[in-house]
Image 1 (tube, rainbow, N blue to C red):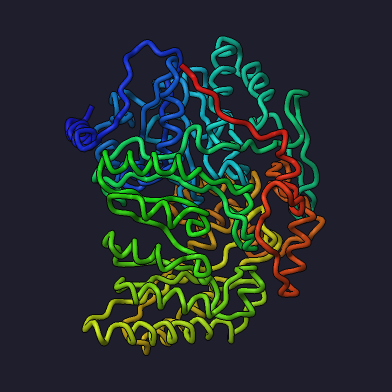
Image 2: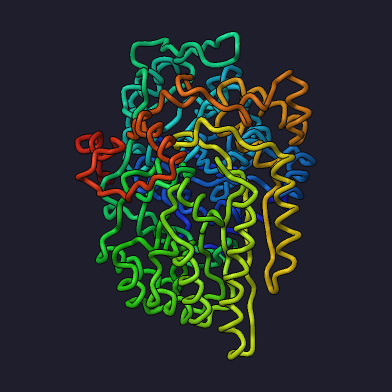
Length: 588
């Protein structure tokens, strides 16, 4: 083993508080991989939750592994060292299970790099009984695991709190059998997807013709599993370290899911129904943060919609940090509390500059809401405001793009009004990203706009924003968002593209040419409403006819009100999960 790599590994461990070390002799050993660097992975609350879920069992040991940085990748290759886990520095390939928690399509190439560094074949058909079982979890397993189907043995379609125990129990009971028998047994657990038990055929135009099961144990549709009660095991930081994006801050999830029905938002569909941590349980988490580190980061898709957000924050002794807030639900009490915690920037997501486009996407906020929120932010003494926008949305016109600039000018005027008496001024940052059509949204049938057109819109915005004082614009490159689009809506055939792109160090265009694939087929093609979509076999609870109806309502600019959890049956989630939701059970 490389001494340099071991010393760096030991330094990361030395900076941690809360690391779980377990003695040898566990029945099942699990290497938990996050396909990005340590700093990024340890900032992901889902990784902490899965790490805790595996390690709370007495019969398992779970250790972490991350993508090394470029310098360390060179060192692994130079010294012939196999990628090893953080806690014990054991080779990743020596574990029974290599479980990936995957949150972003951009990390798909990193999955293959981790496998390469571990000495594990990427193609599941080339692996032997000496290789670990490869398990896929995380949000990318919920919405469309098909681009990764060639790489993983088993996919968990659902939330870990209600899936991990049954998975491990079934694995233990059948591990001495053949892989085929083991996988068939795993299939009997709701939410388990075994890609090799399905065959997909295609029409001459490239669309999906048929998807059939190859064994009777494999269900035709995979139902996503959800946890009903967040309070039994709240998702929260397990390990604190300065080497993350949040630097020793204790993160806790107080709300999961969002019932606002923004029509571009995949997470808004995947995590339905919205669930909240009780105020009592949230206060317990806040007390824990105070004792551990003195600062807490509250996590949630629609944080300012949390019913008791003001009361919760008012009772927290230490510093409070939050993610993006909704302009129509953020309160002056909350903003002033964040200011006292030392917040220098607040983020709000108008998503679109025009009222017309906000109606199309069902954002549910007005320009008045946005300007009022900006007034509260600057009036509380917080100097910086970040505004999130999307370009390339369905029905967008040049006027809609210009309205982003117009809105920024109005926000800047409010900033100046507060800055002049104070004698100092901060910055307004416009974070502008391209619309990427996602599965399980009303816009899943829409094409992505061409990279060329998106680049033109960005240049136009950049030129206009330069004329606004103290305002800047940041954005991802449309060419990378294009790759995200083809991976998010790809079928099994895109696995070959991922392999080719990895072999070419991320050259997606060259990889597509090499294998003769038309990437536009996945990224910029409009889908027919009667087309069989790659992810149709996953049942997230939201009915497809509801999504189609929302598509029509978007075109008409009609508003859909927020969820009325438990009594509404509009989308199908509450109707379908009343008897299906599970609660996690304690494991010794």
